[in-house]
Image (cartoon, rainbow, N blue to C red; front, top):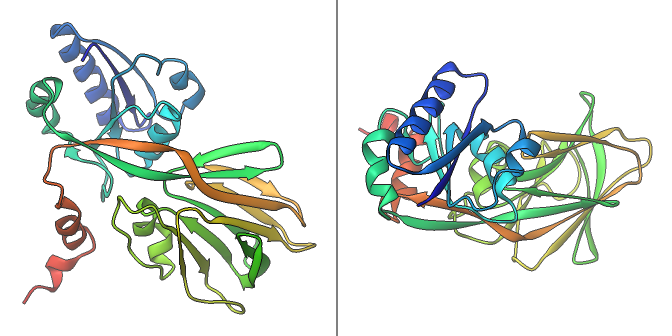
Length: 273
């Protein structure tokens, strides 16, 4: 590899220190690199062209920033975990320097994950985890849901989640949704604390298009990966489908890692007898 990008969580001193160490290590190996706060997406995007690998230092939230930064180029991302859970991250911060020489030589495999494309008026966004419409206040809102042009229900709920397989272990799971294998391309449609309407999650085929329409006089926020938020006015329509772009992750663990990861990170070991 000739050029590597380093994206880090700007508020964590350990992440900033590790980013500097990695930059020095790569320089000693003759590898060109750049580093940037993962929160400064516009500045980072300007440096992505020609980059062969992204080192994302922080946690799953940092990876969500990183995935949007490399869209549409789909540069592989190595997630370096300094966080608490790390569902998407691959390696702990204290292990990366020991493993990096082999990774630079081509060790590992690439996992591809689906993303979502969201359109609202003339704006387009991409999400790795989910697209969420949620109430501004502590009250129920009415959101009409269409799938492929057919009205399926009007949710009266705290909100509605449209999630990828990656997002199935995040907010959608906390709201009672199913877990999908990370390489699945199906789309989850999941209400949040549903009072009226179809209260169960729907797992939709990859070619589906979901339209969510905010009822009159409702105040709703559109959230992209929980990091980009836009207020919606009543009657606005949000269109969600699979993105033509994908997220690519460099993995060093066995392809079956996901199942043991679920067991560990969702507390399975605590229940062993």
